[in-house]
Length: 223
Image 1 (cartoon, rainbow, N blue to C red):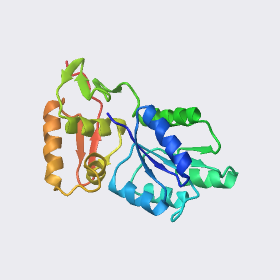
Image 2: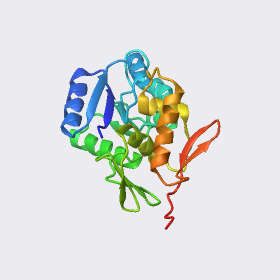
Image 3: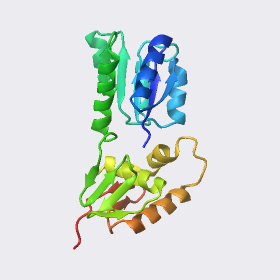
């Protein structure tokens, strides 16, 4: 699975250096140098992690962060020259996940990125929910050690539910994270994929909370 990261930084040299190191570490990277453009990008595409400067042209990083949190819980790493306590507290109050001050080494930045992605479940080699085991890097899933064949889209839906096990994922959030903000299909597409996915999984693994969304339950061994 490709992990997509957005870097929002107006210093061209820093931005290009961060992008280069992230790509070398195996990530897909987009960049923005303006707060307004960054928020537009975040509304048009779903990212697994965002690296965000505070001092930006247009909307500042704190405002971008607040806007992002209305639509996404993707990990956010603040990358800024502002090292005072007030700036850091404000960032964490706006639900930033980590904060690194300039200057920093690229190696440390990459390790912080990897730590955040592990915490969110994106870098785990496998995710276990009851008797279900998902292998994100291989797009494979097994139940009680028996492999279940899923389409890429079905696997992405199941992975999203597994990463949020026990939490309700709204249909709107599911569409946004799986199909993207520019999805122009109808909700029937989601229902078809969900029905096909359910038919391949043990009964009761995916619950529908009427009028709210979907939730992944423990897959209990029925033997």
